[in-house]
Length: 147
Image 1 (cartoon, rainbow, N blue to C red):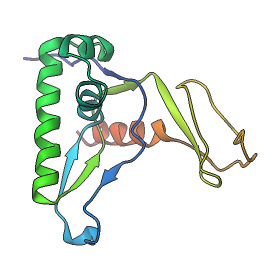
Image 2: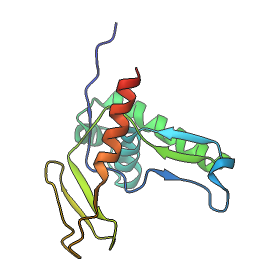
Image 3: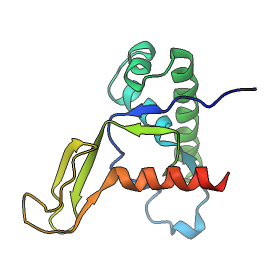
């Protein structure tokens, strides 16, 4: 029997939770879920250009595990693009290094270590600041509770 697997290290949360074809109402679309760790593998390999060994090291996982993640991510992204599906980013056994704080009033974004809390927007002073990592951590915890 397989033991619990290690958390995958993710640099920062994605800026968005979903992507969909424009002009088609969400209720008319099928969706496909990509986990945050699959998203991170895709970001590191295809956006940042790291080879599998380097990217695996950044995520604190083995190279074969990274290869499985990137293959799953690429397949899901291709299916979403080709079949016109909504791509939803959620879940995964993850741990964030950093988080994005986004002011919901002025749109200012700041990258900070995950332990760092920002009560007010440094740009406009608003208290309406969202921690993007929390959205993804909550999804992850909800999935664990369901099992």
